Length: 392
Image (cartoon, rainbow, N blue to C red; front, side):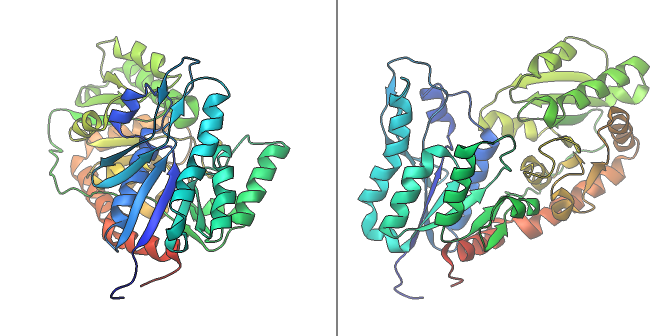
């Protein structure tokens, strides 16, 4: 529509670029969540939306006197409004509760053409949610997690408030989350991927395997460790063709570091927490990407493992547990574990090494399938239509 005022999106979240994370000494963030948010905002620029992340920019407070003022940054073309972050108790919480309200008030003249998107039902967002409704912003919930373990009156009250006050429905990380909110319309959104046509040498002497993210039992840390130990105990010749890379952080990091101390195949290399650039360089060397949130774990149907689309988009063969909507997105372009069984993981790794042409073909199908759903142009149009209730 020629001459129509630009549509504005503010995404209230805690996304962090690497520079800000390092400056504010934050170690409790989620790199995968930040990447998903920033790539969504980049994609929304294609259909003419003016998107900004409105980030709390906070981590665990350490009780010090350090104070980080608000600031504006850009990351890959996306504007990020970082709210102030204080480290003293009570002051930290008060600042994060009130700072978003100040931004919404200053932008109130554009409220009628602005959508305010909330990343999960966080308590820090409640004053902003109430303010947004009073000022006339369109409000939408991005529900990324099923809030497992959130019990008691405060949690139920928060869910009720968000479901009552979000006027534009919800984005959902997976279809099962329709049971976790009464908001409608609800759109399943699996993220944006920058797909790659970079050729991988599937007949190289060594195939790279990647396990990344939060390294805990629920995300398959023990499953991987048990598989490595089983392979090392039997010492098959094919194990020499595997090199396992580990990125991220979590309680299970020490377990994998112990495995990395051994020279017995398969070799395990622990990188720990990486910057986005370091992670991208590691991903370029990978052939097989692991996504091992347990089939019988609390995360199986309450979220979507965004790494599967990221890795498939990079041309990596995804080896995943059969959870959430992964099969809906990747179809026959992935290998699946139907049970949380380390022996099955070993068998799948062996099969990939034994038939590399079939593995390469599956990776190509995964890339094609993820392009159909998560390419920036297609997903950006769907998102814009849903977030603004206007399919222009």
